[in-house]
Image (tube, rainbow, N blue to C red; front, side):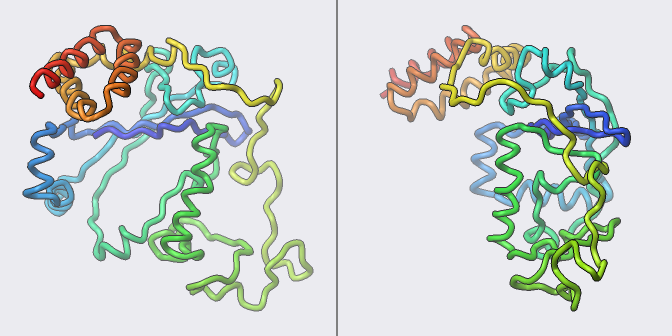
Length: 297
């Protein structure tokens, strides 16, 4: 499978030049999907199929790899672009902002202890390195604090002291103290505040890359806006449908029909209107599929 950041982040250069960025992970194994029927069969007969396939491939030295790409957009381009570039439901078309390869992600080692190295791992979009910042993407802003909250609930307030969650190439110095399962000395006898006369940990200078957020100019009026859905919100969904090959379109339609047929008639009717707004053929094929199901009951 391919992977995507979905959210918009910011890349900040050493001279504080800002670009908006989306990350793309393109599989080097080529995309391979299961049909709904095969997935249902495996869920009952072999639910560990995908995990075992990944584990055994790595054991054989056939390391799964992804090419890491980015899309870049300047703040000036963002201000004039057709879509809100912070809207997580929208993509940046590649013809407007081509993919730029920057590296590879390779899975070359299986965990020695699954619980210690996998179950206890704690990922969050707030865990970023200098030079990468979050944007004002509203859903991203919510996840910046909700993900660490989940980790504190699941693993404890000092989840960052668990070896799998510690940085490997950086020395971390902060004033974080106390709490359950503190195992790193808890700062010893040093004070847990700054400024202080001891001089143990100092806040890094304002304006250093990765230390403070780069400024974002804002203007306008703050107001509670009602949700306004326009035809433009359906353009990208329709374009994606048009890109599919014939057999992929058929599987997509059938998968939707298989789920939507169980909904109330009023919900089916409302949902069909969405599909029609994306693409008239798309909506018609789903409507035909639902009608065939209705004729059998």
